[in-house]
Length: 377
Image (cartoon, rainbow, N blue to C red; front, top):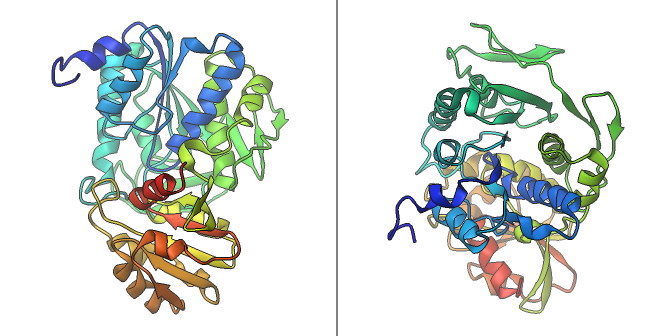
């Protein structure tokens, strides 16, 4: 379609109320949360909503989803970081959720500040016609990128990953985190802004001071943070908090994440981890006695696997670990240096064979999708 009509995306998105979600990690789940919240508010009128639920978030995937639902007036769109600026220009979104920035697919996104700059410039160009931005105040690059938006709702997500935010995106000086108010730059005025929503443990504090418990059906504290951003966006779209959270609780396996499949006779729970920040969140969730780690370096994973050395695989010491996937040998070297006893079984199906108890599988994108297919998910 885009070959036949290069302007199709702009034509398909025009005239709809649009909410976009982007960031390195968590955008699929957050978009599912937001779509579920809006769906709960719509009730039986769900045909009004279009959502690229399978995570196809580049120009083609978004155009495909919109083309399949030409009469839906509400669009909840997961958007790749490189597509945000184009959709801000073409779609005039009402709400834009910015989650985080982390090193990811190093062969394509060499410098994440370049992506942040594209967001900043797009929001500045949009001016008063631009979206209200829901932004993660714990992320310095997100804060810098969102500064030019016409209005920002800041969310304190209680982020624990800080390894991609050592230097100020504004002036290059070191950032410090010794202030009770959050992070700040040592060389300029960039600092963590006051927030409207806050994540406190497994609860979310709303703007009026009320505290809600999401009680999600997906695991991990990071998903409480995702839910806080989705809740802020849902309320901007006119969905009340109780209805929004009721909808979010229907999300159990967004695009296969946290889902369970049977492969080669073994039951496996699938956890997606694409980069060091994602692995830092996923590995603590892998609680089975045997853990399978699946690695590839296809285009969707990123060709550069040097990030393996930034993941703390040492925490798996003493467990039964299986390294699998086309880059299993690279992973095996990293596990050896981490002092983690492991077996190397490059074939995915063979790596899953013969486990009497359910195993947790932590996988990059390509083996994750292949395991979903093998398991009929």
